[in-house]
Length: 106
Image (cartoon, rainbow, N blue to C red; front, side, top):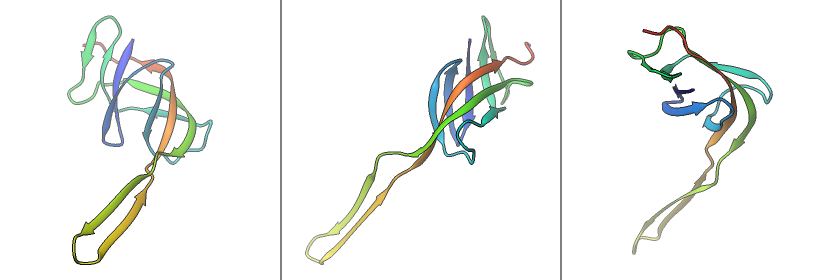
């Protein structure tokens, strides 16, 4: 059984037991979260929502909050003595999928 969920402007195909990194959620480690924007569920037969599947939900447990690898932004203009260096580390939340509720079959 798998489901396609939407969170943080991105879509993820998840199965029970998967550990995924999503955009930062304001939750502490060990808390549970329920993703209700389920776009599709496959439990033997594929159910695709329009735009979401009614009654479907994916529950997950927060494993860790962290920051990704540093991305360096460097701006440079030749012969003008212009140089700017900036770094960025994108925050993320790592969650473990604990259950998938299929919802209504159509």
